Length: 108
Image (cartoon, rainbow, N blue to C red; front, side):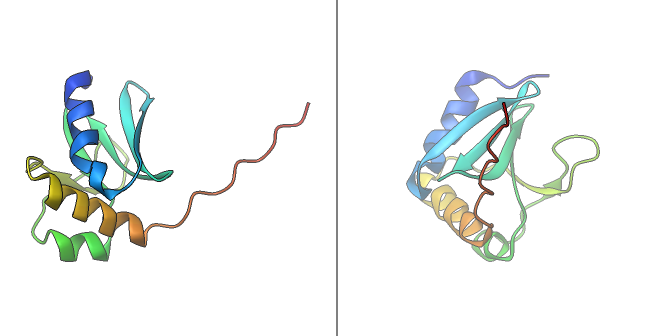
């Protein structure tokens, strides 16, 4: 089951207070980024966020699940209507994640 585009856009809008939010289609689902860092996935109309200590402190008690078979567990964020809370959670999570690795130049 694929994601609905309107749900993906709603998630991006709810996270927008954390920084520059972008989404990229990946294997029929979506990766979600904040300032270039991938911090979560949107799969089957569910919002998954990488597990960090900062995220745990921000929203204790979130359920965890794997977004797809073989993936590491992620937080499953179901209460997404409070934009300030979601943005603060995403900002805290991304603050703990490493910077993206620079892309290697392709040889011709």
